[in-house]
Picture: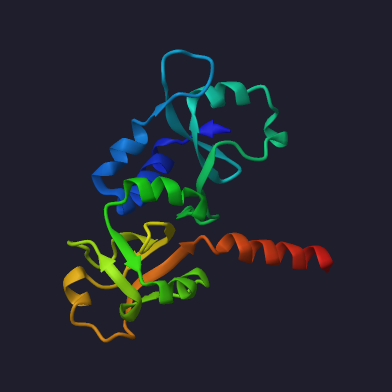
Amino acid sequence: MRPLDEKETTVVFEKLFKFTGNNLKNIVENPSHEGPDKDPGRYCFRLHKNKVYYISDSLVKRATNVARPKLASIGTCIGRFTHGGSFHLTIECLNLLAANAKHKVWLKPTSEMSFLYANHVLKGGLGRITESIAPGDGVVVFSMSDLPLGFGIAAKSTQDCRKLDPNAIVVLHQADIGEYLRMENQSEQLLEE
């Protein structure tokens, strides 16, 4: 496990900024009250086996006692780097994004299941949408009861959404909480083979 270098930090922050905007400052400067220290520490980003973790400083210090090959995971995995060098956010960062989201979309109860099965958000399933969303902005998707369901990329602006056909795509799906179940089914199938 090591700190991110300058290029990796830039790529990770650009991706997070797409979803959080100026609220990225809240993520970076978030005080940590973990560990035996009386003074609150900070959270930091660490890279381990191509995955980026959001972790408190005190936990990083305690993790140095574990050998790198034996360390499976630590902190919250927010994303991973591909072999090509691009960075992808994972569903594990949803709580972090939801608390600091700049742009939000709320789904009608009838379209929640469709989104949880990895489908895009259609105009007909849109309950509410925040103002000033531009195409390509990162969007966090919520249920009408404010439960974070996942995140994606805006396909249309807020203004365009008002004039769209009900079957037009508004948010392109990237990740949802249904992935936990789908991944579990895939791992069970692999074990059976």
